[in-house]
Length: 466
Image (cartoon, rainbow, N blue to C red; front, side):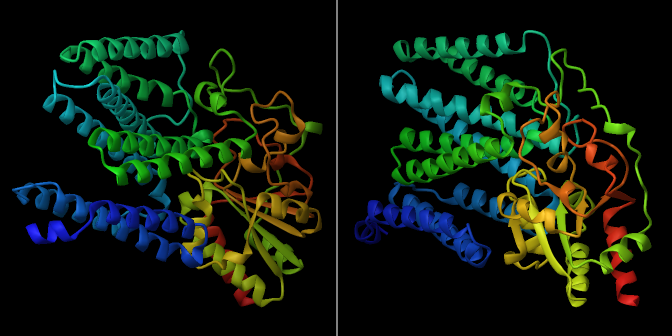
């Protein structure tokens, strides 16, 4: 073992791991290379952990082996048992666990070196504790909202922002005290407690419509916490990998905010979907007193069969119904009849970034048929049928037409410009934003009510029998 430790250069292996992390993340940008990118990133982690254990002077590996075995079992079970529709919840949990791990390392190092900490190391430990603990509690709340264990609606209360500010200032004061008095253990625990509470308070006012942004932001927080842990442990690969996750998470958060025409501060503190008093936003007046037109599956199929182009617009309703495979089957059936088929993807459709892309990829929908919002929007005016499957806020014309709407200014998929708009929904219930969708009352819109999976299966059967 000693000879192996001398032969292996830890920093060189860390450098290789960092390069593999970067290449792996880059390869995730394409479905063709995403699987290999995952394998390279996993290899990078194996190398980093292996060389760390080899060089760490560890004399008893039994607890480490037990921990690795438990983690491997949980990871394998999650990969097999967690459905693709529940992926946002799993990502939220993993973000929280990353924050928890960083917080535990900070606690361990503070206890180990209590009274002997230099000011810089004290600051880094406190930051790792604060960010990691906040990420843990915030991610747990996000999981509860996504899993519908608690209400997905924004929860606001009087003096919420001043209370948050008071908590931040209190944690900052305790941190300053600890820098100059490293032995004050009670102040250390106050910082941890404040961070736990703040994690809850900053997520509960965020509504379901903003969950994609929250997931991306919490992912960034977990990366920042890992990077800070790297400074605590003087571990270069943690600093690099954490910085990569933190930076990519911030970039993704920014892109999500652009897709919603909102600032990050508005997402965190706006209480999306609420009025100033905290009540649900009122329904927008329906232009011309329009009426909903309900069509049967047979009527909808007849229209599609006589069209030359169909654009599928998936939303969270498709994910909830687990209807992605039926979507592909319907697309294949239409293409077999010579009908041009595409799929329009809004950046914040679903409950996490890329949610629709992942589900459609699982159903083996060709990636070149998936079109981003900017790429497809100009085509709707030339499209015969826009088939909206459980999408709501991302196709609501109020975003373009109603300055009083909470989603006004948010870029949407312009499905209303199509010759026919078919909307598959269970009911007339509003989306995450809690507002009426004016699309449902348009003259060219027809509603097909029912479970999306069952409805799509009936459509496939009807086309196959013709």
